View (cartoon, rainbow, N blue to C red):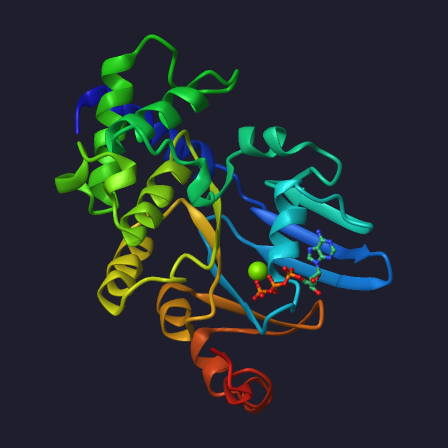
Length: 267
Ligand SMILES: Nc1ncnc2c1ncn2[C@@H]1O[C@H](COP(=O)(O)OP(=O)(O)OP(=O)(O)O)[C@@H](O)[C@H]1O
Ligand SMILES: [Mg+2]
């Protein structure tokens, strides 16, 4: 790691650990679509650096929860605070500026460009922000940072490969690299293991557990094995509500959870 990059990274780590409050707070968040309540009175707190899994059956409201946090949806009622600031009505880009990321869909990758070019562009994109630690024009620093992110998602050997030639699993790994461009403090992963082989899932677990400790994340995941291995805390959702929170061990052994979720023939 060169000195400039390591300085940038330690500044990013400092700016996040310096925050003593909660990374994310939802208070009584409700989201309705016509007559359907996708979220009902959801209250959730995530600490800086915390790794939380959100589990629940199809249609439980997990992705809607993410969409309210990112600003893709405005909640019908309730409040959302990000690093102590009320962002309930903020547009998505204002939340990104405050260190929030989510993994993107495959379609947002530049398929005609290489892995390195994609990550470099993501780093350059976020470096234009007013609060950025990286100034535009520092292409050597950006390239070094891009290389680091590629190494961190185990794609060193594929760094000159075009996205269109990557496997599906590699594309998902690349999305995790892109989500780390800039100085994220909280990343939302929506089913990152979906469609991955067992070997790719093991790799994903290593990538997620290897994220810098100041970066917190929330992972929605149907693969309990992946979710419970990467998370420190778990929120269980059902019918738009969080009905249980605990450690992976508590959740695994909970009778109600087993009946509703594990025993439900969930795929
Ligand atoms: N934009 C929308 N317009 C109307 N209804 C929606 C919209 N987004 C989600 N819903 C509905 O809200 C409910 C919760 O959906 P959501 O996508 O949040 O579930 P989920 O827990 O992510 O499910 P899955 O595990 O299948 O991804 C569902 O009944 C869904 O049909
Ligand atoms: Mg979903």
